[in-house]
Image (tube, rainbow, N blue to C red; front, side):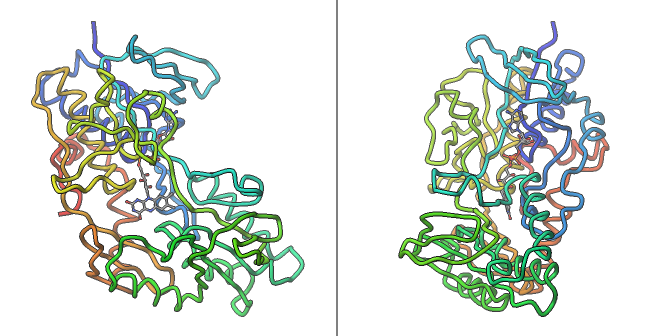
Length: 402
Ligand SMILES: Cc1cc2nc3c(=O)[nH]c(=O)nc-3n(C[C@H](O)[C@H](O)[C@H](O)COP(=O)(O)OP(=O)(O)OC[C@H]3O[C@@H](n4cnc5c(N)ncnc54)[C@H](O)[C@@H]3O)c2cc1C
């Protein structure tokens, strides 16, 4: 009987887990005896890192031809439940039917979602840029602003959360607002961060550039300030004051998708499963975790993978390879990714490119922006649907950033 590898998710980790598993199966000459199935809502890679951008064109490239090129089957739907004892998953298919898939190895790569705590008005009034759907909702709302009566609130956006997503969204928004309200409109963008500073864990030099960019783009920054309520007309701050705003964008935190917690494994503060170096969910035989659902050490000096594409692309390759390797008798590969880089888009000012976990500045402004463009339009997109070309880069020791 054929063996079966099931992968949940076709994001950065799920895609590369499937391609890497297909490569390992092919290397072992076992393509006739092992099936690989990816379950996700559609055979598409959603380019989440770009959802703060003004144009939402080409944000969900189709993966059908890529999967076909390497013999991976795609099942449109959602994994609803993992029965790890019975080695099967329950799938709610896109067509409404439910089905059960048995697996010999399962890779959980269902990513993460923006975290929305029970803050008054957050669910009703705040936008986010976490999914393609929510990015389109924000875009549609911004495009409707000209039909609102002119007011300070209409021209103001509050971005909550001064992490990387908040910085990228906030620095892009002045230009987005002027685009819809007119080049001379008096627009206001306020970035609110509860902590003492924006852009956590940055070198002083990189942080100085971030502030230079915020000034250049005309973004006001409020640090050490919380938001206690959100309404249709703005936000209330922890000091009791209010900011009138018709648009509020929430970027304060993400959590691993809920299936990660359902495994009953040890999880971190982000809901990620703490994995072993092979990316096994250690207490759940036959299950691997990859991308934003896993907490994994990147080196032996204490760093762990961020919830990032950079790590998901590599974690997926390792998890997919190991899932297949256990079935076909190839050596397993321990996950390791000691080099870390960060490229942060900062609107019309440009971008910064930094290296190391303390984010030492390497490139800034236009030079940084050119790198960001290359990453966001080439590096993270799916490969061309050519089997040999895919297998040439789907190995578990492929170095994402040389
Ligand atoms: C606005 C924004 C900016 C970002 N900027 C950067 C950046 O500059 N650099 C960087 O490295 N990272 C960035 N990130 C983070 C990066 O996008 C994530 O870390 C990355 O997408 C994680 O990849 P993943 O494959 O684990 O999950 P995802 O890309 O989230 O993919 C998850 C997949 O699982 C599917 N899925 C979900 N639930 C189920 C289910 N129940 N059953 C089946 N399938 C399911 C989804 O449809 C999707 O296909 C950014 C994220 C955002 C939102």
